[in-house]
Length: 286
Image 1: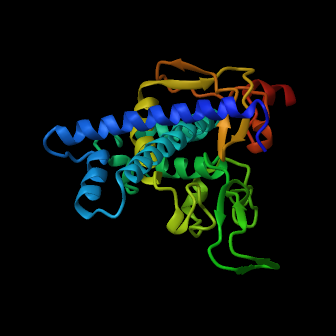
Image 2: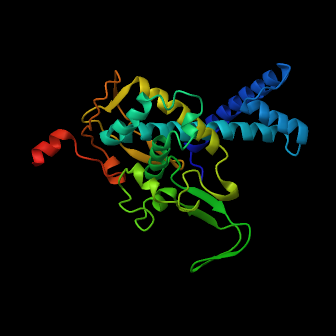
Image 3: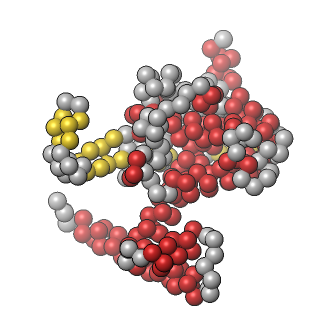
């Protein structure tokens, strides 16, 4: 129920939405007036819209906003969590670094060839399993349905969590551990592994998000050694369905010298992931 402090913020959101719509319309106009549509994603969306019809120009604006917005949010969070997990697991990063030094990812699209870059693929699968950027989704059923012991009338809000599913020990032994090699032996169904959802309502931006991550990640890791700032507070919080690193992930960026090491961190990340102990912690325990 709107309160006195609700409407000003809501009106501000509507103002941002109008500006975003205007920017997208300008971009579409510029693309159309360029003469020929290219092979970029926006051109393909416009081409389908103009040749097949079926949706209005306003709906096309919505598709463009959702595709780019959703894909870039999931990309940013997935990339950040993946870099964090690699920095905190030096044995995995060492193995991946060997692939980078061998030049496996130097040729275009090599990261998408599982025969050439299987470790990178497993790292991303495991990162998006352990800390899925989209941690839960919502649906409304069109028809009455029996779901286990529940009788759901039409229009019932249904919430399901990829985070909860991905941490089920019956599906993933030692579910809180970052273990990319588990993907050498497991083959979960689309409804057991669903970082982007599943079925006909699967996230439209999933292919774009994965393309962005697999293109950028090898370039970052080949030219930099990233390590988490010792003592950093790392917290994850679900904001508008997204698992957001709300306190940031402070990193040191160094030359790629191959000296990978775990750092001690604080924050609720320890309730989300089982992190290996840093070297000085292991020495103290011994």
